[in-house]
Amino acid sequence: VQLQASGGGLVQAGGSLRLSCAASGLTFSAYTMGWFRQAPGKEREFVAAVSWSGGSTYYTDSVKGRFTISRDNVKNMVFLQMNRLKPEDTAVYYCAVKSRGRGTYGASRWYDYWGQGTQVTVSS
Image (cartoon, rainbow, N blue to C red; front, side):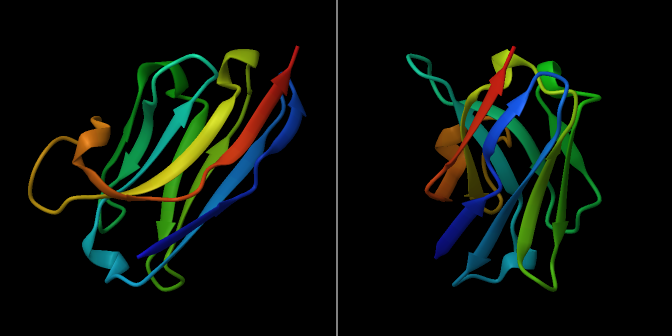
C-alpha cells in the first residue's frame, strides 16, 4: 500500500489550501480514510475522516466549519479542503488508511497505512 500526500505549503492566516492523497495497492473504496496532523513538539492528532462511501465524515472540533474531507473512489484519492486557516493549523499533515471493522476513526492506532506527510505552514 502506498499513500502519496501533496498540496501543502505556506499560506497567510485566513487563506486556503487543498491537500490531496493518492492511494495505491489496496481496494480503496473499501476503507475509511483519515487525515492526521503533527505539530513540532506535539503528538499526532486526528483531523478528519471519511467513510468508505463518502457518506459519513468526522472532524475534530477545532476544524469543524473550516475543513472539508472528501474522496474520489474512481481516482483513489482523498482530499482535505482547508479554509480560514489559522497559525495553530501549522503542522505536517498525514493521510492514512483505517483498519476495517475495528477501532474508532479518531485514534491513530487504528490506522494501518500512512503517507509521508505534507507540511502546512500558516503565517500570522
